[in-house]
Length: 148
Image (cartoon, rainbow, N blue to C red; front, side, top):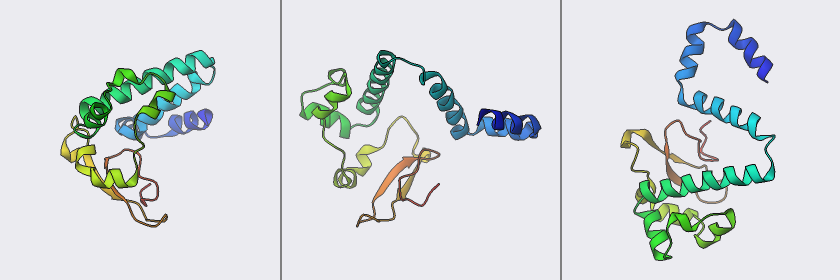
C-alpha cells in the first residue's frame, strides 16, 4: 500500500496533495497509519501501556467535555476517571445502549466543539428500530447510517 501511495503522490498534482493534507480525515488517516506501522512491533507491555494512556485520555475527555451525562455516571458510582485504569475496570461503568443514547442525546455532545461541528445521523434500522445520534462532522459515520 505504501508503495502505491508514494507512486500516486509522486505523479499527483502538488495542489491536490496539499489539499488532501488539509482534509482532517486524511490527516487522521496518515497519523493512524504511522501508529499502526510502528505499533505492530510493540511488546505486550508496550501495547498495554499505550492502551492505558489512550483509555485515560478518553475517560478524562468524557468526564470534562461530555457533561452532564458522563459526569453523572461517574458521580452516581462514586468514581472519577482515574479509578478506571485497565480495560477490566470498564465493568464499573454501564454499557451505553440505544435506549440510553436516545434518552440522553443532548447530554452526550462534547462541549469542547462548536455546535456547527456536529451533524445528526440515523441508522437504517436494520436491527428493528432506526437510531439517531449526533456525531462530529468528518468523524466516523454511524454503522448503517448510509454515510460513507
